[in-house]
Image (cartoon, rainbow, N blue to C red; front, side):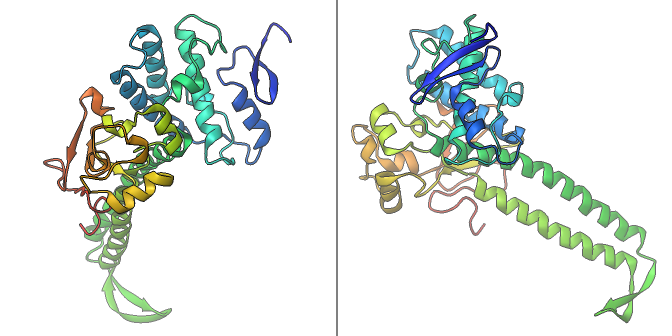
Length: 343
């Protein structure tokens, strides 16, 4: 191994990695296993992953994790903020298409954040005894909840970009409607000449068609506001005895408030069964949470409004509402059904 390389080890053996690389052995193996499309995940997904990890870090800190090691906690939090702001997005290098439900992406993020935290602490890459990709960065999480949550946040941000352009197109047609209101033309039906109309009316029809697509985009965002980060896999919850939603750990997205709640039936095994059958029952308790003193309804029942500058309930940013929206926001979030259904 040259001086420009470092060595990391996993259950399959050891690998030499570039000493300057912030990714680790799991990412290196993913690059070998999934060389499918030759392009990395979208930068918006990488940034959203940073937001999710930051929310989890803030929640874990509020729960007392790393309470005796503020330097480590601060370094991890700074690394997460850098990724959420896009500074480390180029380090997420795994292929956009991969097996394992996004595990390779999650591990790429975990390793980059761990090694960036080590840099902040003045240590070398790969010194995972100080900051571990799994035991610290991925603490109380799994790919099953972080990846879909990050994907939804990224999709919401990109939908906002799409909506901005759709609105511009709609307004352009509306201006053309007024500008061409006096221009008379022959209408067309089934490729044949029809009755007279105006070019302005034609532009109005196009504007209305685009407006319908704008509404569809809005409805898509409503569905995306149901996030997966509302309880880990049963084994992870039982081992940790801590569930992030108890402290409101849901990441932010840019723009105005986003209404989000835990996905009904989105968990595994006992979690999913209990949420389907007893989601609003005061007596129901999640199996992995059986030692907790809060009923499942308190965890999974109400919608949550997340403000973009507040990342975790533990940090004072999330207000629970049962069947009401944030004052001044036209969107509703109800505990008993999909956010915005029928509204």
